[in-house]
Image (cartoon, rainbow, N blue to C red; front, side):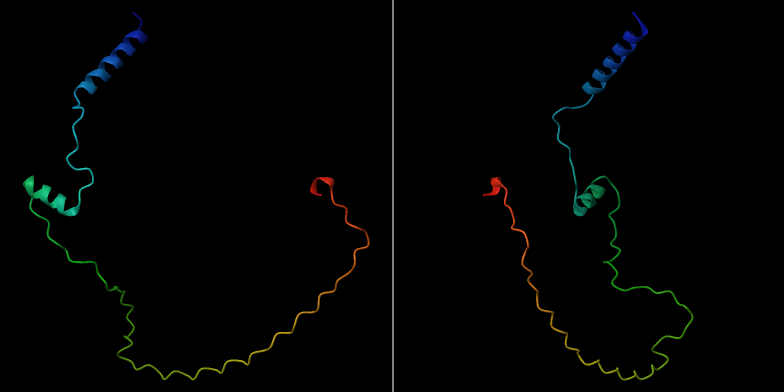
Length: 112
């Protein structure tokens, strides 16, 4: 037998043996488990249960830049806002000028 034929037979036998070792028709225990299911499986497998680290944080942490906070120094009184400019009325558009066409429009016979 040639080397190519021996190689193809070996690949075929190894593929059949690997497929026969799998259990066909069995269902998976957990496909996409929820957090509570994963916690139950952890306890079932002998792991210690997870401890909650609290809910999501709703505050923002800012870096201290070394400047005094706004609460320590009083803020100056705000300056009065400038008056809004008066509304300018837009000019009306120029009237449309209709010019008569010098040549009659021809319509193709397919559109008649």
